[in-house]
Length: 150
Image 1: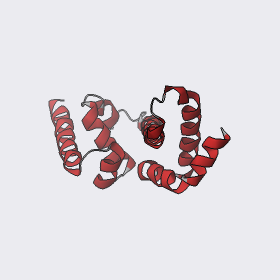
Image 2: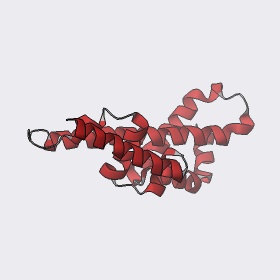
Image 3: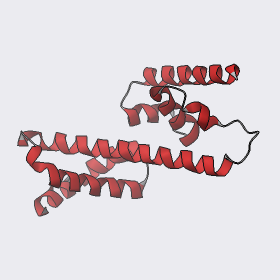
């Protein structure tokens, strides 16, 4: 474990920047790095080629970042529902959005609820900017169609 800690400390800035590009929160990044190190330590025997250790570590780090974003998304949705759920005449965005395909729902939430830019969404989801734009457009269009049906 000491060797792992030393290795990570030598590359701390690099891994911090990677995590920052996903979550933009210092406390979350500390948790992500810690969880990544634990997972790497627990699963080191599954690594087949030690030459790919840094790539493997980075993949685990990115997966932890994505898991953090999913958790954050659930927390934001729950908070919104708790705050706004008691207004019966209010349009319940979150009930409607669950009717939309997940690929569209994900970008809509990141864009309109969490407030990320299209470029940030592209980085978070590791998809091209054009894909982000088309998913936002198609997701909003699908939501509009759902609202018009009611």
